[in-house]
Image (cartoon, rainbow, N blue to C red; front, side, top):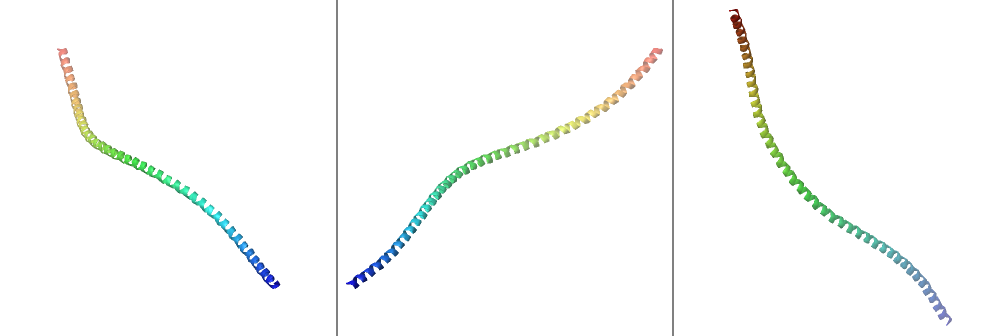
Length: 148
């Protein structure tokens, strides 16, 4: 019976040693599980933060789409204004062309009038000379009449 008790005691010691080893492994695994839970919590936080960032980006994209549509509308309005201005510019160019033609005609008339003015001045000079000659003749006639 002593040998059975010794054998059982030896087996119990072996089981206790194995139990201590198993408990140590369980504690190690429990620590690893706790570390994994912490990492998981950190990953969940990161996922939450990424979801918030994604939502913010979606909002920004939506806002950008609105802004793009507004800019497209402004661009459309500007194109319309440019077309109107181009039409006005063409009209002004046509008016300018017509005014240049009128100006050229008026310049031609002015040149003709200046020529006529010069002709009249020459005629006036000739008439002055004739008038002076007549005055001289009349003076001579008057002298002759006075002498008689």
